[in-house]
Image (cartoon, rainbow, N blue to C red; front, side, top):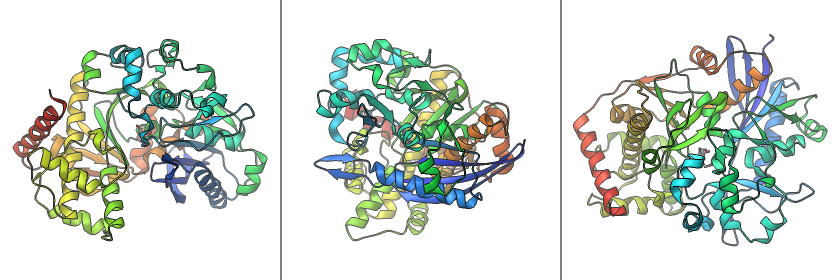
Length: 497
Ligand code: LFR
């Protein structure tokens, strides 16, 4: 088969990008052609995504992709963050701006849901971790609003972008699994959960899977992007984390992954869900992956902690240079103060340095005083949360691992990678940073017949074509154990257990 030029649209919480990949059976070259900021907007007390600005960025990106590819693209795929959605009226028009998962409208929704569907039953049916913003909680929070009443269709964000590009509606399964309305055993909707929560499954477009056709770019899009048609759009792992896990360059099965970016998603790839009571208590999720896999993982606050510190320092007139800050953090005293990087207290936007310092003080540790000390606290804490997730995922699933792969933006953060190797006591392979875009184009290329085989083959192609970095564990095990105990004690205190 001839090499093909594919475009990946990858929408992250802090930026969107369009990447062009030249894919052949033994070659894979990725190039970023357009990156645009994703800046949420607060309107009337509600935090929204600026979805038309994102779509503008997608169109500009496709134009840049066309220019890089001589006007001809073999395909386009769209992935993005999970759980959020747009509502359409009966004519297919968007009803309002999609709401951001960090918005406070879901406060108290989990309790409302628990009153009609006990958490143990909900977990047994969906295998999803308890995150305050799961789609079901958003829908329960929106219950009775005129907007939801007027809605005839709900499209997850990547599916909404695909709809605007093609005119065709669908619900891609990897992202559908984050709604908490899908049964991970049948990989289909759970009528039980929907009925108990009064959610109309007719709102959702038919399910489709990674590799399924998702329509053709509309003529107006071709014109705007300067592309020659036809250009097929393919459903990929439209949840960015599903695509990022395809992009993990692992050999064999005994690996853990940490997809790092705004979030750290740390866990294992399994072939069946773990729905035990222990798994629920540990708050592990069973999201659906490409090729029938299950992403067994836990959400950790991730580099959001640092991003939000940077934003705060900026607003306070003390802007920090990231490279200099990370270098200073590398020299700061290790493990002086650490926080629980899984704590939902860090979810909402707002003064992050203060919230971190308060969490340290509450658990009897010194408050970080400088930006470097705060950054060190964040990175040590993330490494500890990575360690805990990797250890618990193994214990709960019975799968042992010998390597940890770090993919996504955090793979560029050498301090985070080194600390994760030290904390887990396992070798870390870092890269690719653009794992989601790579997973996106690999699934497209396979659907187009340019490459063949399963995840193992795609990963072999990544290993031979993408630059990777290796970190061997070093450092003082006892110091990491002691810091992990400090966090566990603090967690016990806060939950009263
Ligand atoms: C990562 C991610 C996570 C999801 C969170 C919210 O970008 O998709 O997997 O839990 O964003 O959608």
